[in-house]
Image 1 (spheres, helix red, strand yellow):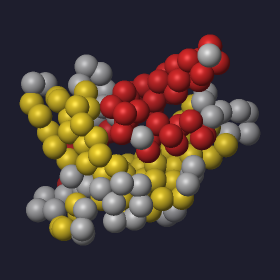
Image 2 (cartoon, helix red, strand yellow):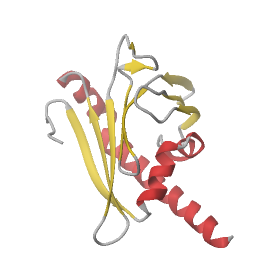
Image 3 (cartoon, one colour):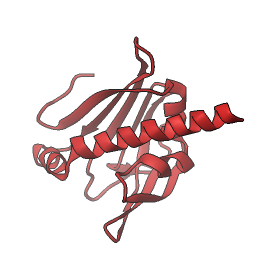
Image 4 (spheres, one colour):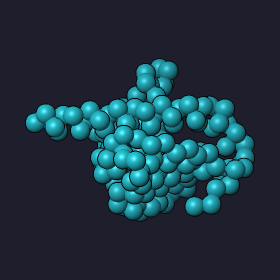
Length: 161
């Protein structure tokens, strides 16, 4: 993937969890609720229809306010790549004021665990700058840390059975 520094924000981190489990976390609504926004904020609802054109809807509770985000899945490469956007909602209905397209990628890391890359593509330099000022790196970094911890807890629970 070729990144455009004017409109894209991205980071890669090694997570100490198996790729298949991280994929499951990102593609299962009940799991999304456990890590997708930095705590103490929360995801109160999530609907995913995991196919191109399917819904990727989330509702967040942030600082006492509900934020509903309607989106659509653009690409699914099982276990490796998930792309969704709020530029459209299910049925390809265009959004009035889209914010970003998220590209989530997973690769086996040579030292174990998973190489996790999160990229946010924006419609303009101004939208990218706004997301960066909102704390993209810190916020999405926190989400990656929460994802890793949550996946490890699922792995521990499965081992205890």
